Length: 423
Image 1 (cartoon, rainbow, N blue to C red):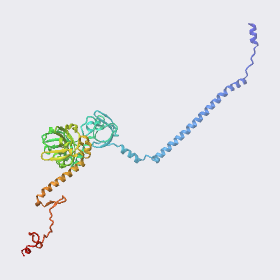
Image 2 (cartoon, rainbow, N blue to C red):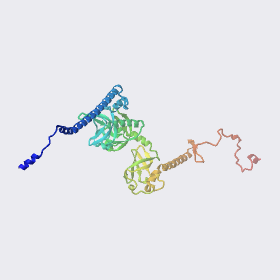
Image 3 (spheres, rainbow, N blue to C red):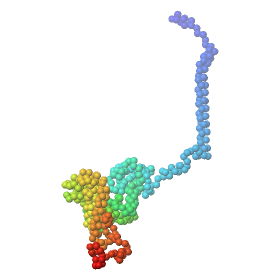
């Protein structure tokens, strides 16, 4: 222990001087001061940049404010007039009766939804989608994407949506069309959909018109005419009174006037009978007898014609009092049997063959009249040697002949005058 104490006692540490402490302290304090100075310099630089940016923004705002105050539309391509025009474009008039353009974007069982650029969509009910009765709007060709003009007829208070109609527009166009057809004195087809004691109701151009029994050519009842199509003419077209009066009798009279003997008309086969086929030619039923179908014998009409077939026929006779029309395709055959073998050729050559037939008839009638006039000189007509029928003109001069210069008839044998013979 003593030796250990002596060893520690022999270790003498020199005293620390104040100068050395000061140097160490200085040595440790120098890096901290340098770091602080760098941080301070960076902060000052950032502050200066931010200040400059704020100054620039302030200047921009002040410049913009001054420009807006003094010249608000300078450099703007969208002018004030353009703005008002845009307002007019999107200014929507929702009054009832207004016509608007719209695009169908969805359909359902009851109608169609239409975009008319209003604050809310519009709806087209199925009953307003067509002038005809339909069950779904698709039957009237109304599908998503279709763009059309509609008319506003009401408003749904539940959701402020507008109710549209196409039927109202079509209704106006139908009346206009009927007025035009009346002015043209045209014949139209109308389907009978109902009737009463006074007449029948027929649909023409989508409108229901009344046909009095006094204006129907046949004696059929309303029940017999139901679902049939009649040729009709307009008698009264009054949109304000919703009155449309039609006549079948006037239409039939005009149709019958065109049924001249030898004329070619187009008809449709209505029914087949063992003795022939009944053909509808403009509302008039004509008979195409089995013997007038072809020059070749037709044993079974159904092998040549079927109900619904469309064909050309020639009028052979027309009894207006009895309402009977006799027809023929036999007279239209270019060669015998063509109606059986090639009916298409018969219909293509129909007018040409009918023209030839009429010429033969005209020549035959002229010859028949000429033969009658041969025995009727008092008629003043005669047939020349060239076969031309004309006035009976004598070959004598108009003032007649001087009979004093004509020698007397020679009744002798020709050897001399009677006086010479007597001598």
